[in-house]
Image (tube, rainbow, N blue to C red):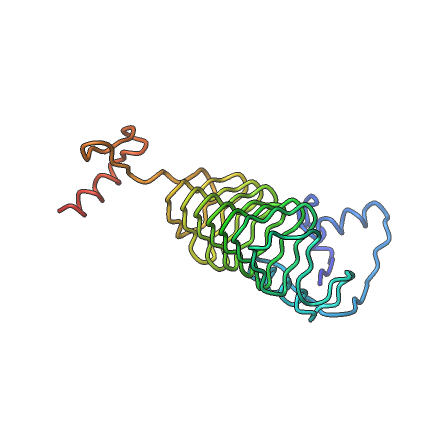
Length: 231
């Protein structure tokens, strides 16, 4: 509910807020109306709430304008070795690799790809990619996002538009990667990545020597941690 008092309108600078947008419409003389919607209200303010709504839709608890009954709806045949646990929705142009397990409560929107031997449960790929051997449980991948081979995304994890989880990376519960950000291969992400990127883990080369550039991979903090571990 937005009550446009005189004070609220005076403080609603620009159209970046609901009050600001409504004030701008009133200033232009546009008509504003109130509508009482039918059905059930769902607040989709996060990945978990979004997945809950998808699960209700797939299970038939929400009335939607589509012809899919609860079960498995796929726009095209899947490879015989793919196991699908209903309910699931698989849109047009989706590619699923052999030996994968999908569902339950999984949505693959048009253009999404799932690699060989991937596990995708209670997750949504919105035109995104989950490469071979990835494990997604309760994750949301936005358009253009990618989980590289062997990556693991736990419940509530989110890859925003064009974000990437590198090969064998692990995202813990409720971790979000913001648009265009990348989690390096082998990294373990415990908090949301909102800017820049993570430094890759320390790597040992031939003869047991550390590899990397001083000040980049080989930072003072990383070397202190390593020294503490080695005693």
